[in-house]
Length: 62
Image (cartoon, rainbow, N blue to C red; front, side):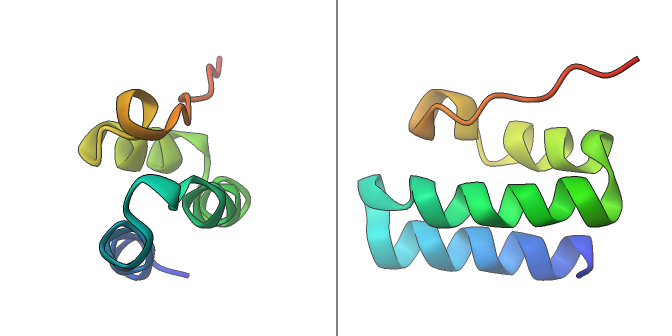
């Protein structure tokens, strides 16, 4: 998965499921964390304001 793929999947989930998109977005963020790293996942969380909208918090890393 690329970061652009992840962005598209997150955006699609938001459009399709609205306030109920959290489970789908959480799956995408999990894939991003394992494939592209925590920093990239955190960037997407910030970009889409997922912590405030869906309760998906960024991961702290060292």
